[in-house]
Image (cartoon, rainbow, N blue to C red):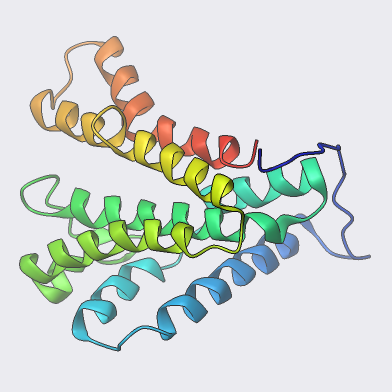
Length: 204
């Protein structure tokens, strides 16, 4: 398992540091790791389109949950950085595709124009595809053990695939507007809940 010896450890913050300050510092750490990864890639238009959405203003909630769970259990958040990055990359792919005209036809995402409004539908579709595969590339090239990398990839594939997020997207297309509260709850559980749950399960 990823955490062979689990311990409970509380986060120690710097004197005078507010919770908002701490969140910002963690978000910056995640952004720095993401930028370093993508800056090592050929700087093509497709990468520009992918990074446009990846670096829109974001709370980085999923990656933060992953890192904080790792720190709480073993005291070393950096051990889960690859998993945290992959979660954020995959989440961004889902947002790009969700905004496409064939889905929600969104115009704004996080206060900015959606990807297809800036780069066109074709390039936006490919940017999403590229991010999806990049998430698994990050995990495959992680410095973690082979067993851990496989566990991470299985968890992410199950959460994002046809039993999880993709199924949620199908339900969203076919049932909008929703007729019952049960339909809406099932949508959120599949479209959002499965991937969010993996933010914690990744490091258990």
